[in-house]
Length: 47
Figure 1 (cartoon, rainbow, N blue to C red):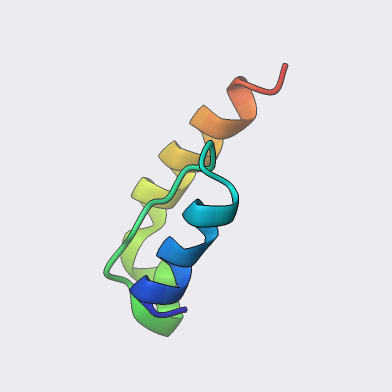
Figure 2 (tube, one colour):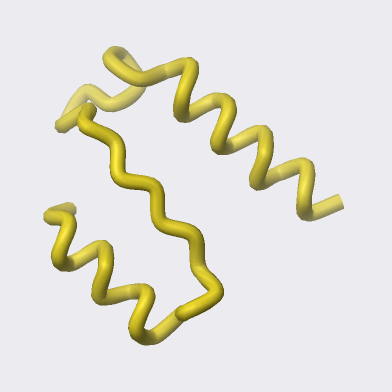
């Protein structure tokens, strides 16, 4: 989604996290390690 649209969520959900990655349509192919780290961090805080 475009950055502006992603930032719009923060107006409605100010406690949300927003991570903007330059990965395009193939995010996991280009930024896998960063996505994994962010996902693991998020999931570790749910326990």
